[in-house]
Length: 596
Image 1 (cartoon, rainbow, N blue to C red):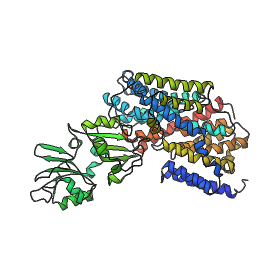
Image 2: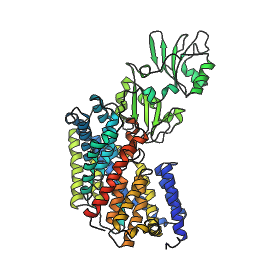
Image 3: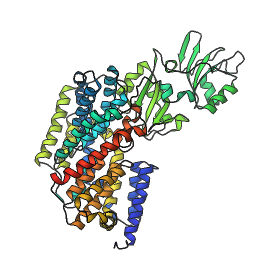
Image 4: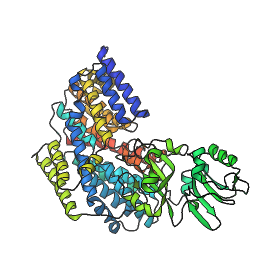
């Protein structure tokens, strides 16, 4: 019978329960949640004060930061972009060949480059290649996200979760995993996954073309109206700037039509009788403006994409990448109008359209914005590292000398790590410093390349794993939760650990799921007197491959809006794939790493 937990274990379990709740509900950002967890552990004296920086001083944290810099060096020199653009020749004309080429390419790159960075580069490329072949983007982008995860589990540096679990193993006195130790299982899973997507997934993937009107996709008809200025309107003679000073800045004048002339965002032009104004805002504010100035609604005129664009103005969709400085800023505070000559018309967040009080909304990673941009400023927008234009290809600037140097640095890092010349931490730090010293990256670009949310997540969540082990909570949990499975043997326990990790990862940070379950796996292995490495490998693979929801993995969220997906689309395609990977893991992990 399981003994009653002591007070320390109860407190740790309360912190774990709170952490899971905050990670799943996202009441707070994941990095803020991690710091809250760290403060709670210190306040409750569940970890000693000297362990406050345990997470930030952990080798996994420094290694992950270095990998972000290495990936940025390959991207900023144009090497990855150049390689990706060569795919057009190989992709053929059909959907299956395009899917196969893109999946193989991104899986290979994601084994060595942070997969969020590779997906960010691939989204516009895949979109353009699909449109050239009259293929719906929804047939291509989800496989792209999944394939990036296939590649990530092939090497130790493929994802931050791999590095994190390796660090937990080393800190527990186990030998470090080799750079290519995961490759046997990873390559098999990648091969099976790509075959599944081509043979089975193609029947489950939705077919939604981007020819859908953006007005309809973003439900802009709820926020746009054409108003005609009658002869007796009090608006005559006033500019829109004067109006918004005394009115509501959330109501935007997008276009003024005067006879045969069209003026875009004419805030300074005095308004005349019979002008037609295309105005954006929520319904209540639009009606207030209409009634206040005696304007007439042109209800018979349907607002379409062509009314929001012309030879001078273009509608553009842009994704906010995780490392963007825009994350956490309000749309109003980001000042996109001044920076890029753009007006934000609508925002999609995980399939939900946000259209009211846009200026006050704080941007989050992977939000998709519908922008109305001056044509002359679109190229400037596409060159910005803070937004990814998903439907256009930027002009490449490839510094061949620096690109070859960046490739040589990555090759050196992999060689040193694979041969054991340097530990993985020192090898990646060497590579990150070399990227800056050789001019492949400026120091400000290196800082910007690091996803600081992940760094603070690791800094705050790793001490929770330490508390689980030190207080005995992990051992208590392993006995309570997995004890009933122990009598059936380690393979059954491995299967339960894998499916539990996979389920948790679909609703919360994959790194957090790994940190919570790794100590339990170690305790379970000790109880059963078996090698814990197979258990840790199961957790690593389960946490690094999340297919069933668009929120379980960052790359899924990145393609969500760009592909026009619904939440259920990921479940239809992803759940069978998760189950296939579970079966492969249970079958092959004991075979490759010895029976536990």
